[in-house]
Amino acid sequence: MRRTLAKLGFQVTKPRALESNILFDNAKRNLRKHGKLIRVRLTSGHRKLTFKGPSQPGKYKKRLEIEFDLPDNARLEPIFSHMGYHPVFRYEKYRAEYSKPRGLGIVLLDETPIGNYLELEGPPRWIDQTARLLGFSHRDYITRSYGYLYLAYCRERRIRSKDMLFHDRRGRK
Image (tube, rainbow, N blue to C red; front, side, top):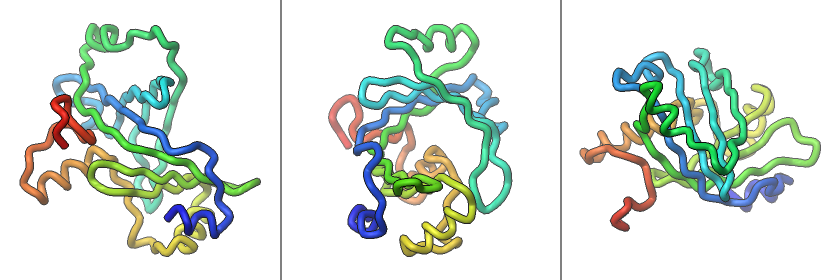
């Protein structure tokens, strides 16, 4: 895929880096039930807090996203805990970002413990054109979250789901 992107004129705009993500919710999983999430992401020493609203139905995944950088000393977990929110899912991925000069969108190449995925972000017409150039059709589009994909992966393989990590704390895959 990297070679194909290069042949099509895409350039690396953010090099491959490990992203560690923690999703927060309350005991009743109210955020999840309403299609929302609160996430803290660590990438190359930088932390971001993200809120995502529910997805709008359709071929493309559209949802409100509010995101901002966190200072190094931000201690959100105790604040979330006092508000009733606790870590409910951790997941990792390696991500590289590609775009064309003066392009309308970006291509994100994600390597996860359950497989590799492309995310196309941009106007719907650009997404469709870029997907075709990369050899994909509308039938290949996935709008589900990594949490959903991970649970499906575990169900298919009849393995216990926990967190989607490359290695657990004891070094096992």
